[in-house]
Image: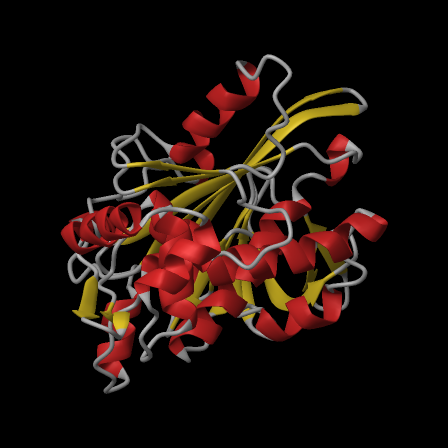
Length: 334
């Protein structure tokens, strides 16, 4: 009830919606509507009530809750089952627990969102700073009928979705640092971790986890020089605006759904290569490839249809797969 009323008030933001209309739309009593409005106010929504006019949504603070997230979704299928947790070890771990204990439940497309992670993880075992109320931490649980060898490209698909979603909500223009980071002004703002359970030719489940730095103004010492947040970048751009994490999540999920469906047609990046290249921070730049078999330098050219980074090593083109390989700029992080 709260979610449905919130959706109506948001659709009519700036205008009053009568209590009688809400009663008729949802088939409930005026008392039920009043109780739902009261609960929304207690959650932090500024709702103006005027006799004989109804209710008007005056302001929405940065609330992350089941109702707020659901009211922001415009996807066809992704995230229609939202699991919001105030605190969790990691959203990826929570997603895997759902998949492994589902007992036949259809969990494809579930989104797990957390206010705080106590054991947030990044690629190659790194930790991800996830303090309460400052970032957007979420994982999506998928069961696509694809070759397991093609699953790693979903990291690239999520990279595109976060770049597009951030641009739509904030007007900022982040870029992808291949394969699993998104950067703004040379600093990391998004990290993506894709994990899979599979047999030789069959995917049991895929979890795509994403962390977005939204309102942090300080970072742990070990990442202070390489990390930034939407808040800091908006301030740097001279724009005093707050970012709704629920609205941002809605935009990212909608864009992921769009790019994911293109990816599924071929199970590769052939339909997305051109747009991905336009988002790629490394493209045309000198990079250092940190390969356990031996480091080397070259110029990043973009990706191929397998999502591999193409690096020109003076006439010889190397194809870099993500795996245990990292890519850095010659003189810094990007």
